[in-house]
Length: 241
Image (cartoon, rainbow, N blue to C red; front, side, top):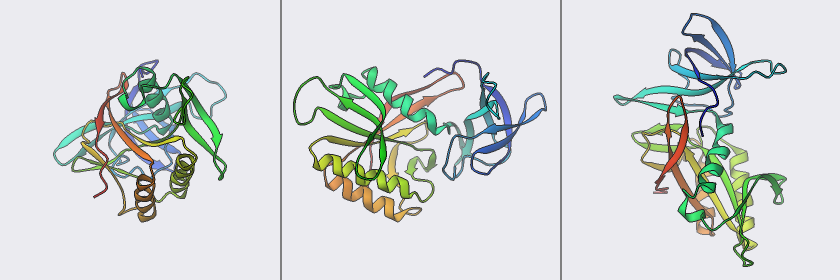
């Protein structure tokens, strides 16, 4: 996914009220940007960090700027991280359509935000195949992984009742005969594997374990990140131990 226009670079002053961030641009101007990330953003919102913003020309928006990337510095290295969780579904759908996700190559239709389940949920991606068999439908729930420590990406970065609900819904779809997949989208290149963050949300870790034991599949892919584009390209292992 290429950014349609050049991103603006700046320095983070602070992130606050979950959806707002104050940023000082390279020219010294201070602006407030929208932050499309509901998580804690642990390690990704340190004041002084280099950040990149997109700019919308929609006159109805209160904040024209959106925070897209941050440069993190940890354990002796730096990495760019895509923190806009609204892009994760697009990145995964783009990779599936481009044939980059080998486990999902059999599907020829992708629908987004389809209502499903018993708990009033919307599946991020519903894949279907023209072949008429019991596995022709595949429910894909996408999670954006920004928290990393020592090469391990962790999800979630804050307790999430909603994320646990999504796992329950996936288990129900699997019981009904469809494929069900939890897909960890990792927009940072310093991650080598993905694990549930049981030290943050034990309920999520336990529910993920139960889901995998009941036929839900887990996939993880790492993205190449730059101020010009973000592209999913490398599969990563999902480990529970």
